[in-house]
Amino acid sequence: MDLHPVLVRRDLAKTCASDLEIHLHEGVYVGLAGPNLETPAEYAFCHRMGGDLIGMSTVPEVIAARHMGLKVGAVSVVTNVCYPPERILETTHEDVVASVEGAKETLFRFLKSWVKAIG
Image (cartoon, rainbow, N blue to C red; front, side):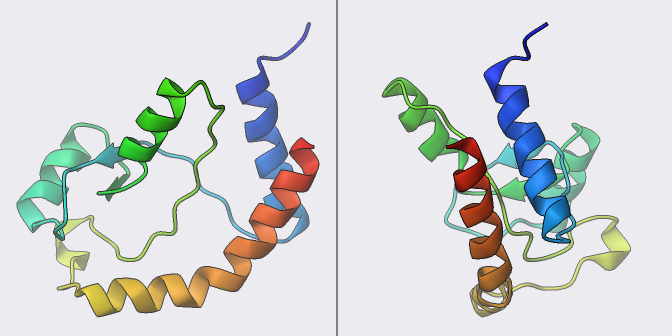
């Protein structure tokens, strides 16, 4: 039985991450309008809805790409912990940029491997 192409790409992502010893998480991404950082109440609401990750990008880009007929795979860099409430710390734009900068090399290694595996 042939697997759906989306499942194959997801499996390739998992394999590439494992081969590079990168811990890859899967979850539900909640896209909120920005530009702003979420409040503790928004974090709690999204968590109760089943969200694992909140962001203000990715969703609009994926919608636009799908309207163009493009195949899409998305990867996010988690820049701050937003649940449970006692772990929430005030986050600044500078904190987010620093987190992404710190993850940049790992992200590039993963994406290079994943794109190569997809062909």
